[in-house]
Length: 157
Image 1 (cartoon, rainbow, N blue to C red):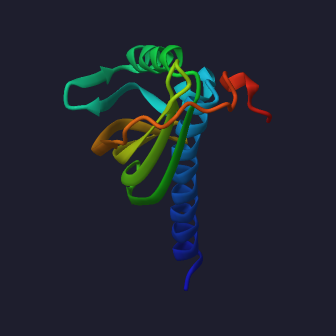
Image 2 (cartoon, rainbow, N blue to C red):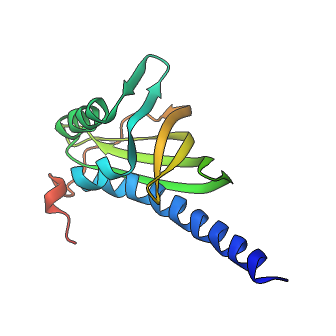
């Protein structure tokens, strides 16, 4: 084993960790209505394809789309799992599964999810999502109303 091979292995591990954090930041930004964090996960020319007929191109369109979701759903909660990445620096691809719970204005909940297929790009030393597509989406029938927090701001930190 050489220093050079160790450096390459360390760079790969760091990239994998950064890509996993990126996927978490996407969820945290959406769920906590943190527009700065949400914006930071995307390249400026990113594409977010939430369904075959809903495609948002560019950071401004992506920001507007999540802000529309925030107006519709008082609370959202994303959970991603099974995140795998293939790194070919300075780009990478990935796939993860997601479960999403959203509260409707009448306080009923919808559980849904699917998988995300991603293309990532390293921009000035930071990984970003360049393309995210929802595949295998599902929604369950609305659940009964809940007495939980009425607004995302009601959730304790």
